[in-house]
Amino acid sequence: MSFAKLFQQFRKCKVLVIGDVMLDVYWWGGVERISPEAPVPIVSLQRKEVRPGGAANVAINAAALGAEVYMIGMVGADAEGAQLLECLRQQGLQIQGMMQSTERCTTTKTRIISRSQQMLRLDHEHVHDLSASEKQHLLNKTHELLQHVHPDVVIFEDYDKGLLSPDIIREIVQLCQQLQIPTCVDPKKKNFWAYEQVTLFKPNLKEVKEGLHLEEITVDAFHLQQIHAMLHDRLHHAYSLITLSEKGVFCSNGQQYWLIPSHLRHIADVSGAGDTVIATAALVWAATRDPRLMAEIANIAGGLVCEQVGVVAVDPRRLQTECELLLGDISFLAD
Image (cartoon, rainbow, N blue to C red):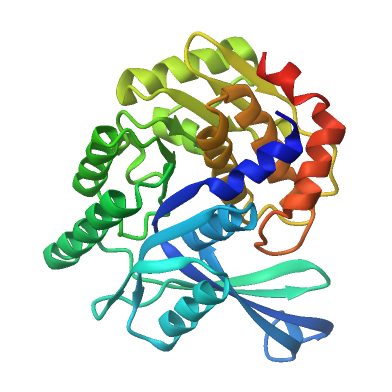
Protein backbone atom coordinates (compact mmCIF):
# COMPACT_ATOMS: atom_id res chain seq x y z
CA MET A 1 0.00 0.00 0.00
CA SER A 2 1.27 3.49 -0.88
CA PHE A 3 0.38 6.64 1.03
CA ALA A 4 -1.83 7.61 -1.90
CA LYS A 5 -3.79 4.37 -1.56
CA LEU A 6 -4.00 4.75 2.21
CA PHE A 7 -5.49 8.23 1.90
CA GLN A 8 -7.97 6.89 -0.65
CA GLN A 9 -8.86 4.17 1.85
CA PHE A 10 -9.89 6.86 4.34
CA ARG A 11 -12.80 7.68 2.03
CA LYS A 12 -14.29 4.25 2.70
CA CYS A 13 -14.23 4.73 6.48
CA LYS A 14 -17.20 5.68 8.64
CA VAL A 15 -16.39 7.44 11.89
CA LEU A 16 -18.64 8.19 14.87
CA VAL A 17 -17.48 11.04 17.13
CA ILE A 18 -19.10 11.30 20.57
CA GLY A 19 -18.25 14.19 22.84
CA ASP A 20 -18.33 17.80 23.90
CA VAL A 21 -18.92 20.10 20.96
CA MET A 22 -18.28 23.83 21.19
CA LEU A 23 -18.26 26.98 19.12
CA ASP A 24 -14.91 28.70 18.63
CA VAL A 25 -15.30 32.44 18.03
CA TYR A 26 -12.37 34.56 16.84
CA TRP A 27 -12.18 38.33 17.06
CA TRP A 28 -9.26 39.64 15.01
CA GLY A 29 -7.95 43.17 15.41
CA GLY A 30 -5.02 45.50 15.76
CA VAL A 31 -3.50 47.11 18.84
CA GLU A 32 -2.17 50.66 18.59
CA ARG A 33 -2.50 52.00 22.13
CA ILE A 34 -3.21 51.25 25.79
CA SER A 35 -6.57 52.07 27.33
CA PRO A 36 -6.67 55.21 29.53
CA GLU A 37 -9.23 53.39 31.72
CA ALA A 38 -6.95 50.50 32.71
CA PRO A 39 -3.48 49.17 31.75
CA VAL A 40 -4.84 46.96 28.99
CA PRO A 41 -4.44 47.12 25.20
CA ILE A 42 -7.27 48.47 23.06
CA VAL A 43 -8.11 46.07 20.24
CA SER A 44 -9.54 47.70 17.13
CA LEU A 45 -11.88 44.95 15.87
CA GLN A 46 -11.38 44.17 12.18
CA ARG A 47 -13.22 40.89 11.59
CA LYS A 48 -15.02 38.02 13.31
CA GLU A 49 -14.95 34.32 12.53
CA VAL A 50 -16.69 31.25 13.94
CA ARG A 51 -15.53 27.65 13.70
CA PRO A 52 -16.79 24.38 15.23
CA GLY A 53 -14.53 23.30 18.09
CA GLY A 54 -13.98 20.54 20.61
CA ALA A 55 -15.44 17.23 19.46
CA ALA A 56 -16.72 19.04 16.38
CA ASN A 57 -13.14 19.85 15.38
CA VAL A 58 -12.23 16.16 15.70
CA ALA A 59 -15.12 15.33 13.38
CA ILE A 60 -14.07 18.00 10.90
CA ASN A 61 -10.50 16.68 10.86
CA ALA A 62 -11.77 13.16 10.13
CA ALA A 63 -14.04 14.53 7.40
CA ALA A 64 -11.17 16.56 5.93
CA LEU A 65 -9.25 13.31 5.54
CA GLY A 66 -12.15 11.90 3.55
CA ALA A 67 -14.15 9.87 6.07
CA GLU A 68 -17.94 9.83 6.39
CA VAL A 69 -18.42 11.30 9.84
CA TYR A 70 -21.36 11.03 12.22
CA MET A 71 -21.64 13.14 15.37
CA ILE A 72 -23.27 12.72 18.75
CA GLY A 73 -23.18 15.80 20.95
CA MET A 74 -25.31 18.46 22.58
CA VAL A 75 -25.83 22.19 22.07
CA GLY A 76 -28.02 24.65 23.89
CA ALA A 77 -31.32 25.98 22.59
CA ASP A 78 -29.62 29.30 21.83
CA ALA A 79 -28.27 31.33 18.92
CA GLU A 80 -24.78 29.84 19.36
CA GLY A 81 -26.21 26.33 19.16
CA ALA A 82 -28.08 27.12 15.95
CA GLN A 83 -24.92 28.68 14.54
CA LEU A 84 -22.84 25.64 15.47
CA LEU A 85 -25.31 23.18 13.91
CA GLU A 86 -25.30 25.20 10.71
CA CYS A 87 -21.50 25.15 10.68
CA LEU A 88 -21.56 21.36 11.04
CA ARG A 89 -24.03 21.02 8.16
CA GLN A 90 -21.80 23.19 5.97
CA GLN A 91 -18.86 20.90 6.79
CA GLY A 92 -20.83 17.93 5.44
CA LEU A 93 -21.08 16.12 8.78
CA GLN A 94 -23.93 13.74 9.58
CA ILE A 95 -25.62 15.45 12.55
CA GLN A 96 -28.74 13.37 13.17
CA GLY A 97 -27.13 12.40 16.48
CA MET A 98 -26.86 16.02 17.67
CA MET A 99 -29.23 17.09 20.45
CA GLN A 100 -30.45 20.43 21.79
CA SER A 101 -30.86 21.09 25.51
CA THR A 102 -32.92 23.67 27.33
CA GLU A 103 -30.89 22.98 30.49
CA ARG A 104 -27.48 24.20 29.29
CA CYS A 105 -25.93 26.74 26.97
CA THR A 106 -23.79 25.97 23.96
CA THR A 107 -20.16 25.89 25.05
CA THR A 108 -18.58 28.92 23.39
CA LYS A 109 -14.94 30.03 23.47
CA THR A 110 -14.24 33.54 22.23
CA ARG A 111 -10.61 34.34 21.44
CA ILE A 112 -9.30 37.86 20.87
CA ILE A 113 -6.28 37.84 18.54
CA SER A 114 -3.90 40.56 17.43
CA ARG A 115 -0.75 40.19 15.31
CA SER A 116 -1.25 36.42 15.21
CA GLN A 117 -1.15 36.24 19.04
CA GLN A 118 -4.03 35.22 21.28
CA MET A 119 -4.54 37.98 23.85
CA LEU A 120 -7.62 36.82 25.75
CA ARG A 121 -10.15 33.98 25.79
CA LEU A 122 -13.72 34.21 27.10
CA ASP A 123 -15.57 30.96 27.94
CA HIS A 124 -19.36 30.63 28.22
CA GLU A 125 -20.35 27.13 29.32
CA HIS A 126 -22.22 24.81 31.68
CA VAL A 127 -20.28 21.75 32.83
CA HIS A 128 -22.79 19.85 34.97
CA ASP A 129 -23.65 16.27 34.03
CA LEU A 130 -26.60 15.53 31.79
CA SER A 131 -29.99 14.99 33.41
CA ALA A 132 -31.40 11.46 33.51
CA SER A 133 -33.66 12.13 30.51
CA GLU A 134 -30.79 13.65 28.51
CA LYS A 135 -28.57 10.65 29.30
CA GLN A 136 -31.22 8.25 28.06
CA HIS A 137 -31.72 10.31 24.91
CA LEU A 138 -27.97 10.25 24.25
CA LEU A 139 -27.76 6.47 24.77
CA ASN A 140 -30.74 5.89 22.49
CA LYS A 141 -29.10 7.99 19.76
CA THR A 142 -25.83 6.12 20.18
CA HIS A 143 -27.44 2.67 20.06
CA GLU A 144 -29.35 3.65 16.94
CA LEU A 145 -26.29 4.95 15.08
CA LEU A 146 -24.04 2.06 16.10
CA GLN A 147 -26.59 -0.50 14.98
CA HIS A 148 -27.61 1.13 11.70
CA VAL A 149 -24.37 2.83 10.60
CA HIS A 150 -21.90 0.36 12.15
CA PRO A 151 -18.94 2.78 11.99
CA ASP A 152 -15.40 1.55 11.46
CA VAL A 153 -14.24 3.40 14.57
CA VAL A 154 -15.74 5.39 17.46
CA ILE A 155 -13.93 8.40 18.93
CA PHE A 156 -14.72 9.71 22.42
CA GLU A 157 -13.74 13.38 22.62
CA ASP A 158 -14.04 14.37 26.25
CA TYR A 159 -13.57 18.00 27.33
CA ASP A 160 -15.12 17.66 30.81
CA LYS A 161 -18.19 19.65 29.76
CA GLY A 162 -20.72 17.13 31.11
CA LEU A 163 -21.81 15.11 28.08
CA LEU A 164 -19.78 12.03 28.98
CA SER A 165 -19.99 10.36 32.38
CA PRO A 166 -18.66 6.99 33.59
CA ASP A 167 -21.99 5.17 33.19
CA ILE A 168 -22.45 6.47 29.64
CA ILE A 169 -18.86 5.67 28.70
CA ARG A 170 -19.11 2.14 30.11
CA GLU A 171 -22.31 1.31 28.24
CA ILE A 172 -21.08 2.65 24.90
CA VAL A 173 -17.71 0.88 25.16
CA GLN A 174 -19.45 -2.41 25.97
CA LEU A 175 -21.78 -2.04 22.99
CA CYS A 176 -18.83 -1.27 20.71
CA GLN A 177 -17.08 -4.40 21.96
CA GLN A 178 -20.15 -6.48 21.17
CA LEU A 179 -20.22 -5.01 17.65
CA GLN A 180 -16.41 -5.36 17.29
CA ILE A 181 -15.97 -1.63 16.69
CA PRO A 182 -12.63 -0.16 17.87
CA THR A 183 -12.82 2.76 20.31
CA CYS A 184 -10.40 5.67 20.60
CA VAL A 185 -10.45 8.27 23.34
CA ASP A 186 -8.97 11.70 23.95
CA PRO A 187 -9.47 11.95 27.75
CA LYS A 188 -9.61 14.80 30.18
CA LYS A 189 -9.18 14.92 33.94
CA LYS A 190 -12.72 14.22 35.19
CA ASN A 191 -13.27 10.87 33.42
CA PHE A 192 -9.63 9.94 32.96
CA TRP A 193 -10.04 6.48 34.52
CA ALA A 194 -13.51 5.78 33.11
CA TYR A 195 -12.33 4.53 29.71
CA GLU A 196 -11.68 0.91 30.58
CA GLN A 197 -11.03 -1.57 27.77
CA VAL A 198 -10.91 0.97 24.95
CA THR A 199 -8.72 0.25 21.95
CA LEU A 200 -6.66 3.45 21.94
CA PHE A 201 -6.11 5.80 24.88
CA LYS A 202 -4.57 9.12 23.80
CA PRO A 203 -3.69 11.50 26.64
CA ASN A 204 -1.05 14.18 26.50
CA LEU A 205 1.88 14.21 28.91
CA LYS A 206 0.26 16.75 31.24
CA GLU A 207 -2.90 14.65 31.50
CA VAL A 208 -0.82 11.55 32.27
CA LYS A 209 1.01 13.38 35.06
CA GLU A 210 -2.27 14.54 36.58
CA GLY A 211 -3.97 11.17 36.18
CA LEU A 212 -1.10 9.24 37.78
CA HIS A 213 -0.28 12.01 40.30
CA LEU A 214 3.31 12.30 39.11
CA GLU A 215 5.38 15.44 39.49
CA GLU A 216 7.65 14.66 36.54
CA ILE A 217 8.00 12.05 33.77
CA THR A 218 11.31 11.33 32.09
CA VAL A 219 10.66 11.25 28.36
CA ASP A 220 12.52 8.17 27.24
CA ALA A 221 11.44 4.71 26.10
CA PHE A 222 12.07 2.98 29.43
CA HIS A 223 10.06 5.40 31.57
CA LEU A 224 7.25 5.76 29.02
CA GLN A 225 6.90 1.98 28.89
CA GLN A 226 6.43 2.10 32.64
CA ILE A 227 3.78 4.78 32.17
CA HIS A 228 1.91 2.57 29.70
CA ALA A 229 2.03 -0.30 32.20
CA MET A 230 0.62 1.93 34.94
CA LEU A 231 -2.19 3.09 32.67
CA HIS A 232 -2.91 -0.47 31.52
CA ASP A 233 -3.15 -1.73 35.11
CA ARG A 234 -6.18 0.56 35.57
CA LEU A 235 -7.69 0.71 32.09
CA HIS A 236 -6.87 -2.66 30.49
CA HIS A 237 -6.79 -0.92 27.12
CA ALA A 238 -5.00 -2.13 24.00
CA TYR A 239 -2.75 0.82 23.05
CA SER A 240 -1.50 4.03 24.61
CA LEU A 241 -0.70 6.96 22.33
CA ILE A 242 0.83 9.71 24.46
CA THR A 243 1.51 13.07 22.85
CA LEU A 244 4.71 14.67 24.13
CA SER A 245 4.38 18.22 22.76
CA GLU A 246 7.65 19.26 21.09
CA LYS A 247 9.15 15.82 21.86
CA GLY A 248 6.77 13.92 19.59
CA VAL A 249 4.57 10.93 20.49
CA PHE A 250 4.90 7.57 22.23
CA CYS A 251 2.86 4.50 21.32
CA SER A 252 2.83 1.12 23.06
CA ASN A 253 0.78 -2.02 23.61
CA GLY A 254 3.07 -3.35 26.32
CA GLN A 255 5.03 -5.67 24.04
CA GLN A 256 5.99 -3.19 21.32
CA TYR A 257 6.66 0.52 21.58
CA TRP A 258 7.57 3.46 19.35
CA LEU A 259 9.03 6.75 20.58
CA ILE A 260 8.67 9.06 17.60
CA PRO A 261 10.29 12.52 17.67
CA SER A 262 8.50 15.58 16.37
CA HIS A 263 9.48 17.14 13.05
CA LEU A 264 10.88 20.66 12.89
CA ARG A 265 8.02 23.19 12.57
CA HIS A 266 7.34 26.89 12.92
CA ILE A 267 4.81 26.71 15.75
CA ALA A 268 2.17 29.44 15.58
CA ASP A 269 -0.62 27.97 17.74
CA VAL A 270 -1.07 24.56 19.39
CA SER A 271 -4.85 24.96 19.71
CA GLY A 272 -6.67 21.93 18.32
CA ALA A 273 -3.55 19.85 17.69
CA GLY A 274 -4.80 17.08 19.96
CA ASP A 275 -8.07 16.97 17.98
CA THR A 276 -6.11 16.42 14.79
CA VAL A 277 -3.96 13.72 16.36
CA ILE A 278 -6.90 11.63 17.63
CA ALA A 279 -8.86 12.00 14.37
CA THR A 280 -5.86 10.99 12.27
CA ALA A 281 -4.86 8.14 14.56
CA ALA A 282 -8.38 6.72 14.61
CA LEU A 283 -8.65 6.79 10.83
CA VAL A 284 -5.25 5.18 10.26
CA TRP A 285 -6.13 2.49 12.79
CA ALA A 286 -9.50 1.85 11.14
CA ALA A 287 -7.83 1.53 7.74
CA THR A 288 -4.67 -0.43 8.63
CA ARG A 289 -4.62 -1.74 12.24
CA ASP A 290 -0.93 -0.74 12.18
CA PRO A 291 0.11 1.00 15.43
CA ARG A 292 3.45 2.37 14.24
CA LEU A 293 1.95 3.82 11.07
CA MET A 294 -0.88 5.28 13.16
CA ALA A 295 1.58 7.01 15.49
CA GLU A 296 3.86 8.25 12.71
CA ILE A 297 1.08 9.84 10.64
CA ALA A 298 -0.76 11.28 13.66
CA ASN A 299 2.51 12.86 14.82
CA ILE A 300 2.98 14.61 11.48
CA ALA A 301 -0.66 15.73 11.33
CA GLY A 302 -0.52 17.29 14.79
CA GLY A 303 2.60 19.23 13.88
CA LEU A 304 1.14 20.56 10.65
CA VAL A 305 -1.89 22.22 12.26
CA CYS A 306 0.37 23.94 14.81
CA GLU A 307 1.80 26.05 11.98
CA GLN A 308 -1.48 27.96 11.65
CA VAL A 309 -3.20 30.35 14.05
CA GLY A 310 -6.45 29.12 15.54
CA VAL A 311 -8.18 25.75 15.47
CA VAL A 312 -7.95 24.40 11.92
CA ALA A 313 -8.36 21.01 10.27
CA VAL A 314 -5.45 19.18 8.73
CA ASP A 315 -4.91 19.57 4.98
CA PRO A 316 -5.00 16.01 3.54
CA ARG A 317 -2.92 16.85 0.48
CA ARG A 318 -0.18 18.44 2.54
CA LEU A 319 -0.33 15.61 5.07
CA GLN A 320 0.11 13.00 2.34
CA THR A 321 3.03 14.95 0.87
CA GLU A 322 4.68 15.28 4.28
CA CYS A 323 4.23 11.56 4.96
CA GLU A 324 5.87 10.69 1.67
CA LEU A 325 8.71 13.15 2.33
CA LEU A 326 9.36 12.30 5.97
CA LEU A 327 8.46 8.62 6.19
CA GLY A 328 9.41 7.32 2.76
CA ASP A 329 8.13 3.82 1.97
CA ILE A 330 4.93 2.86 3.77
CA SER A 331 5.65 -0.86 3.34
CA PHE A 332 8.88 -0.45 5.33
CA LEU A 333 6.99 1.21 8.18
CA ALA A 334 4.43 -1.57 8.27
CA ASP A 335 7.07 -4.32 8.61
